[in-house]
Each structure stands twice: as structure tokens, then as C-alpha cells.
Image (cartoon, rainbow, N blue to C red; front, side):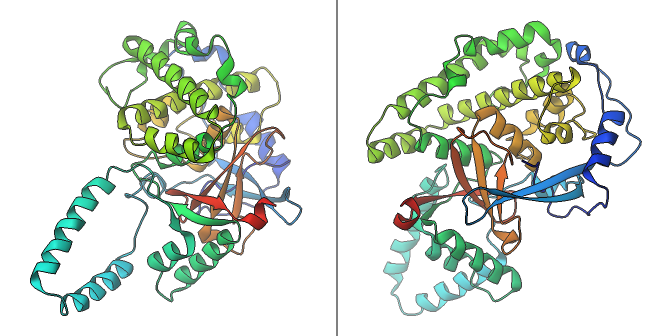
Length: 403
């Protein structure tokens, strides 16, 4: 299989072949694995602009991924890719249209009715704002509401939603607070969980923070969302609690047989803000552990997925220490997951993350898989994005698709 999909919507194409890129990686990117034991390990100097090996896979009529090869630069607009708005962006044009319609309606309603509606809207808005996963909505109704114009972008989005609607009947909006990729992926994984994954069954799973700290002193620089001033040496017990919570919730929900009861349990979990954000901290730490494993495997000559080379080919993450300092510690604060980090999340969970990238409709990148070469037994979760920054989730697979 091939690796990986586009890491930047605006990246310029390079005309180097894949073997050339891999040879450059071997010659230019390398930090000895023993350097991981120091927080001050220096990143190797790179003489060229980091380039990305990009090989896309999309589902065709056969139901299996099909290969295409591209090479693009890794230049990512950090601000554009790392910020989300609540439930995703809504254009000014769409808002203006809605405002105009409301003004016309107000002319035909009495004052008391308008005031009652304002109070109701305020109450609804204040409660909806804290919803991590909104209630289901017909996917085409959502599309018509969000994309009313006749611009090329609006037409492309409508076509994209029409294609998704062939597979899924409804959509659930995800709260956009820079955790949307975690939230959408974990919600989908738990919603369809029927058993505890093998990596969660490991006896030393909860000992992960202690084990890593004993090897890598720089992990003490880990930052918790709830306690940004504390260092990892002081909070390792809390990370352990978060990992135990993740295993407990996954086990409990996976044992629920009825689909309605399972959905209710997921909805309840994602309304508990304290537990929800604790789970995201656990996911981030699992990503760090996976990154360390991949980095060490590469340095010892073992085979690793291509995205791992790309992950550590960035100037800001040439080793796991830099990845933690410059990326993982910032998730949820100043940014979300970049595309190469979506691969890392997929490997950490051992799930295939399938994403409908609506702005890529009618291209080979419309349906993207993270990773491109998943294991056969990995479950698949499906997300929707309009811009590679914010993610929503499609639900209620159509009956024909299920058959």
C-alpha cells in the first residue's frame, strides 16, 4: 500500500520521485535513538525544504483502497490548519441570508412573540454551546442550510454532501475547540465498539507514564490542559488515571449490546466535560508513545510507515521530544491536529480513520484514509471535513449501504 495523503491543501507540488525522497530522508534526517534520553537533544540540520511523500488511497467500487502517487511540500499554514470555530465555520454570506429572512419574518409577528422567541433562543444557545456532539440532523438539510450560495465552492460542497448522503442519512456537528479531531474520532470509535482493543488489554497499559519517564527525562515537560503550569514529574499519576478512565469507559460502552443504549452512553460521556477532556489527554499521551516507538524502530533499521518519516522530517518535530514540545503540548490550546498527526492518531488507536474531504470533491482525495495501509482487522471510523481543520461525523448508514 502507499503513504500518505495530502498534509496541506495549499502545498506546492514537487517533481521528485519517491525513491529520491526516501534517499534524501535517509541522508538528512537522523537523530540517534539514545538522544531521546535528553530534553536538550539537538535536531539535525536540514539543508533542504522538507518535502512530503504523498500517496493517496481512495475507496473505489471494489471497496478497497486504490493507489495514486504524488509528492508535495510539507509547508503548512499553521494558523489555517490549527484553528476551529464552534461546530465549524459558517460563512458571512450564509449568516447574512439568515439574518435577512429573520428580519422579514419579524414584520409579521407581534412584539410578545418576538420576545418569547429571543428568550428561547438564548436558553437554547447557552446549552448548545457546551454540547460536544450535537443531535442528529438530516445531512442534506444541514447542507442546504450551510451552503445556500451559487459560488463554485458552495456548489462543490453540495455535490460532496450529496455523495456522502448516498452512504449516510444524518450528520452530527462536533464542537470546534481544537479537539474536534479527537472528539469526532473517539465518539465514532466508542459508538461502534463491541470489544476492548488488544492494546487496552495490556497489563502494563496503566504503567505507561511511569515507564516512559524512567527512560526519557524530557517527558517531564508534558503539559496538561487542566494544569498547564505543572510538569510531568508531578502529574504522572494523573495521566495514569486518564489512561485507566479510557480503558474503563471503552470497556463499559463496548459491553452494551443495544444500539440505542450504546448511543445514549456515548452521548452521556461526551456531556461530561471533565471526563471528556481527560480522555483527550490520554489520547495525546498514547500518540507520544506511538511516536517514540516509530522513531526508535526507524533508527534501529526496522520498517516503519512512510508517514513516520514525514512526521520527523518537519523542522519542528525532528524527534519525539520536539514533537511533544511544539505540537502535542499545543493541541487544544492554540491548534488542532495537522494531517500527518491524523496518521499518528490512527496508529495510536489502531483504527482506520476514513475522511470525506468535501472541498476535494471530484478528485482522488475526496475520500482519504489515515493510514493508507491499515491492517485488515483495524475497525474503520468515518468523519467529514470541509477544510481539513474542523471535523463532523456522519451517522445512520443507509440501508442499501449496510446490505
